[in-house]
Image 1 (cartoon, helix red, strand yellow):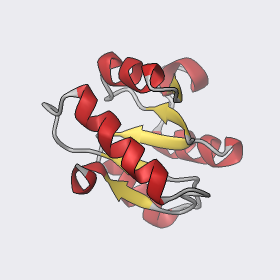
Image 2 (cartoon, helix red, strand yellow):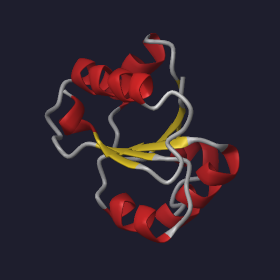
Image 3 (cartoon, rainbow, N blue to C red):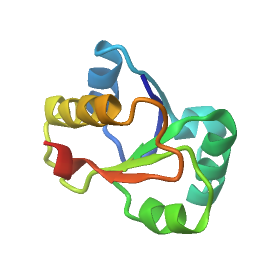
Image 4 (tube, rainbow, N blue to C red):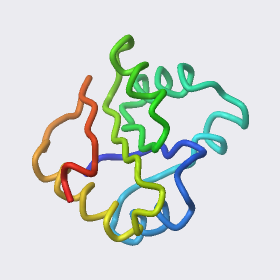
Length: 110
């Protein structure tokens, strides 16, 4: 199972839904401090082998420029938490070993 850092744009309901399904998820602002920029978050996650969960498209651009442990992005702000979890589980099952340097758009996994 992947371990995640959720950026500030991910609602608490999504984080709690993932946790209730057995995923280890921390919030970026709690782990790295409020105001930590996206580049620093992505680099720290790479060092700790954590996948970034976000709905901030800036991470897609950064993921093309930097080495990372994986980025999962969804754009639909109205996506119910259970749908995010469903997509994450499908990705988790498909990428058993690693998401290293992969950017995954969760809407494609619904």
